[in-house]
Length: 467
Image (cartoon, rainbow, N blue to C red):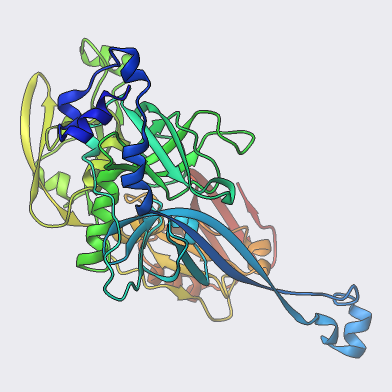
């Protein structure tokens, strides 16, 4: 177990010393040297958010009282303070800290408490909801703080010993031990870049944003989630791999923003059934089923029916892996893609490009005397779809907000995508406006609602329905 600790103390690398305990003496060794070196770089994060509410009188919506007293019963504004806690890791000695996005999301004040109990106000220099990461900075007045170095998370193996350090339940800094239980876990959360390290080291509420370290004391992941029905640790915790964390931190410090390249193609994992139909001896890879015209995959020569095997010499067995490894790259340059076309293996060169915003989003609130008055719309493009987390291949106009009265009258909901109006294809908001100008009181349209097609006929006078 702790021969790796001996390796740390003697200066040997973890990779060269990775083995199970061979004597009672080794079993009795301590994690203390690793913890002493790593723990000072793990901090507690406290956030405060002001929630504004309004108290309402029971007479506020009574037409009789409104007739005589107007809106005087609307109620006085009130506010309450919502507090939360989490953990973070110092990754640069001048006060740069990484934590989870969900730890600081919506916070009005962020306070960082170091291991020596000193507290600092923190500012957010970059937040990445898609990866559930945020980069903070505290002012240290030139003082150099202890840090954790990034490990290469691609080198982590199932069975490696790990320590989780954080502030569970706000009780104070706590260290738990375990192993890497699995790699490349997906379908764990709603994050866009799901490719988690799974561990059985106890991870509890408050551990979010804390460190998952190896026996060399390097950061292999940021603890982010637990799989639990009770809210406590059941031996299934998840961490964001250090390679993704490093990429986000470097982007924050170099440009102050994060622009990821997009692949411009989609597909499905080659399952046992698909493998059999393709004549493969085993499942693996991604069967390409869609290519965005003019996108990076199209420029590389990828075609529907190709099977993607590797990206930059890394095996990809599902779309999440392809999405993750593409997201680790920076815009500019190229990346090799190994595919199988028929019975022939090929190496394609994929350009690393930012998703285009064509057409421009043109966020618009519709005005005028028509059925869609007050509806807030935006044009979809690969860039905007990537930003809001919708299908990057979807074309049309997305609904961002709908007044309640309009929603009741038209059945249009937030998140719907207009595909056609009066049998004319919708590409931009301009197309919808043109049809509304022709007949503002009667309209037929088709929506994409979470992958389901909805057809509506709306009349100011006469029968209206959606199906």
